Length: 537
Image (cartoon, rainbow, N blue to C red; front, side):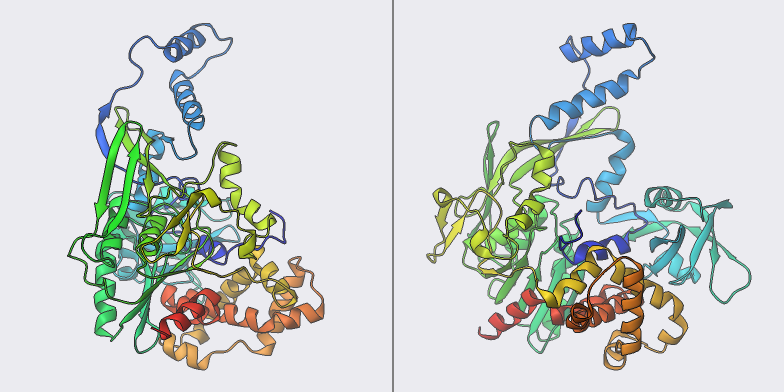
């Protein structure tokens, strides 16, 4: 990736909070959509060309081959010729592929990051087994079941395999803690650890609430309702729903979320395919928030279920959409569980927003071009200028209120918020692209954890702590050593932006998302535009 490409801010953050659950979303993040389970489908029977070919290769090839592996590769090849979202999941990867959307996993309950080839605990999950035993942020896990895992070039995947396990099973971890001469041993009994869809919800001011959804899992609707009820108790009468970076999940959860904000009878979404009859989903009278003034935030990372919710809100003239054009995934997958424990996710239909638009972007050039389309948007200037967005005039649709909306490539927001550029952002953007800013703040918290303990909560931290000129100078020197070359004028121009984000990152390391978002969002243009527009309502 070229250094001048400004990667969206949540990507470097996301790498820092990988849960022990084994949330291996990298490969699957844009592929998971509506999943329904069919009866077991037995494959490999009958006289097919593929089976005959595999059998011939197995019996005649010059070297030994693995027939099962050949079969899996043949299946993968077939699916690649169909669309980017049809997917074969080997039995060995099935649990990791499904865990992110189940709403929980079995593990020890820590967030970790590999630093200097050592596993460091960032935070413990509240109420989880690690927190109950006294494991702390900043602890280094150096051994698991008496086997060394430090300084062996360990990977996230290997750590998760060692720490995950069925509820009730035990795992011994050896911890190195600053200030102690000897390591500490803990025997942890694994338990069910929740993986929340609601990253955070809080009252921004007297009447406006903010709620961020990271995915649409099996528990998303229940979490949303609870969060909204809590916000109502705080006097919230207006809402900012943040779906930026939300790559989707279960269709039924997206429908349930949209239902909360729409009056009975309003169309939410419909699906149809060559072998699937048209099915529609309409709002019921169970939603309690259909009169709540709202704004939905989206960006190029908002896909699938996120686009269903945004499309339903936009097409029903229910609320304002702010941000940048969404990803453009309008294909529906069904999951077929196979007899050997593997699974097939096959695209069986397209979904359509209430005005009748399919927002699936083209994929004729293949999967690689499809997933690289974000960079095409960047290079074409779309992320900086709404006039550069390539929407097709022939795919224009009208909402009941007379607003023009487009199909054929994602949800186009009502209010466009460009990526920030220019001299004032050069040092800032380079710091983000290389992950240097997060790395510095991570090390800063680790080295100053004892003195930072004086801040009992986020409110006290926000009022008292500030990034001093000395800390900023340390960062500038650190960035220079890390390969970021900017002139003094550029460093000075970015100073306030960098300081604001540095403070938010430090708060995240201390208090998790509850510390990060209230501080970071004050500098977020889309969020501030949402506040301004809601103030008028």
